[in-house]
Image (cartoon, rainbow, N blue to C red; front, side, top):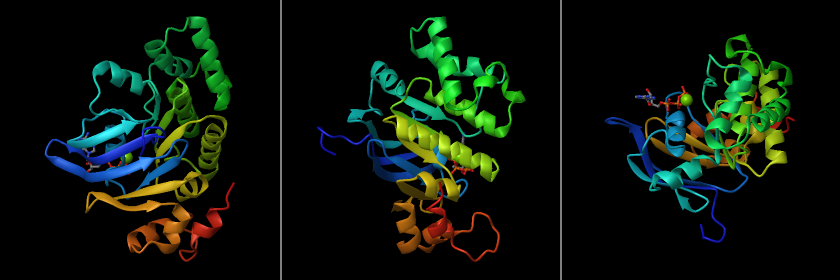
Length: 268
Ligand SMILES: Nc1ncnc2c1ncn2[C@@H]1O[C@H](COP(=O)(O)OP(=O)(O)OP(=O)(O)O)[C@@H](O)[C@H]1O
Ligand SMILES: [Mg+2]
């Protein structure tokens, strides 16, 4: 990408994993500003591992990640902190602090990364909770929340610092279809009301077809990207049957024969 109009994210020849275990290699892709990219693939293929590398929780074995033209992987600690402040992250499983109330969980990034007064922090927290429909849940602890409320709280925490890039790891995992759709609608609202760029890990076909501009499909065997493009186009024309099968499976599991791609792409 040229310097005057850089992508939001450029990933170049990235390899990542744990110890001697290379989970992914030769990963190269870009995400345009305001794009919603879904990372998909079977369980264990390395979706969360890739996310960890992108947000600096794990150091890559090889390669580079650039955000709006700023080199992240080679950054010094102060530049790295600057870039990290522009991220919002919803971790797989929500990862709320169990000993803190919902409000305290959302206030934490504000305490760590801003110099806002307590009154201002409380105002931001109240606003963010309102945005995700949890205005009445501020004083509850995570153990007192339903699955959908936990995801909403985790989304509010990810939005606390008005991120430029949102990373969401399985934002509707384990939710029933109606609650899952509500979370998708919230994510759609964030897309429509902010300038944010999103990288979302998910295997929920309904979410993919509702929200994704593009998907990136990872594969455990080749440890790489096996498809990249708009989901409906890949479902219809990918030469790779693994890609077509994944994107055409019947998410409801009802009759096992209908392709969801055309029907689901018109979901609200
Ligand atoms: N902390 C870790 N230490 C060592 N190996 C790990 C760690 N986390 C994940 N792995 C391994 O890395 C590989 C990819 O795991 P990862 O969690 O990235 O997959 P995933 O695609 O996110 O799966 P899922 O869809 O189940 O969330 C797996 O073989 C897993 O066992
Ligand atoms: Mg995962």
